[in-house]
Length: 350
Ligand code: KG4
Image (cartoon, rainbow, N blue to C red; front, side, top):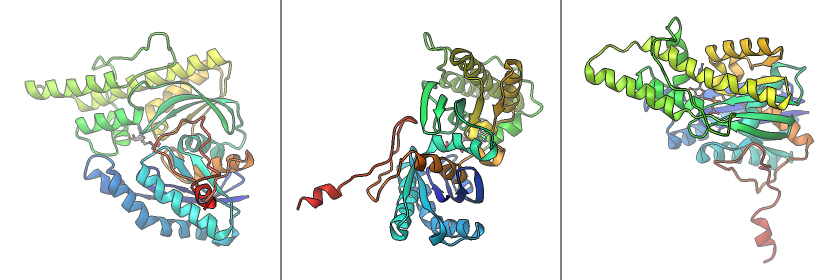
């Protein structure tokens, strides 16, 4: 089964053709990062307009690169939650219209389920159940993946997402946007013991964590140094920050494995591209004697291939939507987001 999938939840307009949830036939990504870099972060209105401009070209490129025509695809999928609502609506409506006009099924996909499914593309042998650390710009959580479409959040951030903290710290250190890759680069060769940074602890919820205290500590250090005219070693501070993020996430994934007895470990999301986090995860998994799966770097960030992978399993589970499908700025990973009925009911009565 070949699915044409779309992703437009933030600042990437992406389309891909995926076969049977596991094989990438094409994977096109148009990033708007350069435009948003001017403002130091994503401007939602600009993102929506960027998607409108790019989506048709990206869709055509995806089918062309897969050696197909639109009529040859078996179903159309799109990210419908969570994300920037204006941005989501562009991809969801384009995909829905295409599905409607081609008489193909439409499959709405949860963005974070998609991030997790990036691993299914990279690792043919990977099957649920597994434990996933999902860390991206909008959310950070520990997910117990019982089955391809049955997921449970067992821990997560009480405030900021890991990616949000990376982006904020990068802005304060003046290294630019997007912050994650810049901090990763800056931290290379830095002394990760040079600055003492706080590590969060949530009473009674050992799998939960927080990044706001860490973020504030870095901001305060930078501001104090500036006010006093003292030198700030940005390289060392970036290394210390990265270490603190990793030391927040990695032990919790380990504890989750011990508590649940699920010893197949997975990482997902943009922050899973972080070199320090990847090294620490590998080390922890080795100690635990557990396999760890991490997407290749090009599948960590937002892309439509991961949406096509997850869409296949949503389709098998009967989770298709209709022309009445809406998009949602927020939705939990365990929620069913597909909508079969809509406003048509109201008009059918007239
Ligand atoms: O998963 P993603 O592409 O988009 C969302 O679904 O949110 O994640 C984007 C986040 C950004 O905050 C970005 O700074 C972060 O992932 N990121 C990284 C790295 N590459 C991207 N964070 C740390 N280290 C990286 N190498």
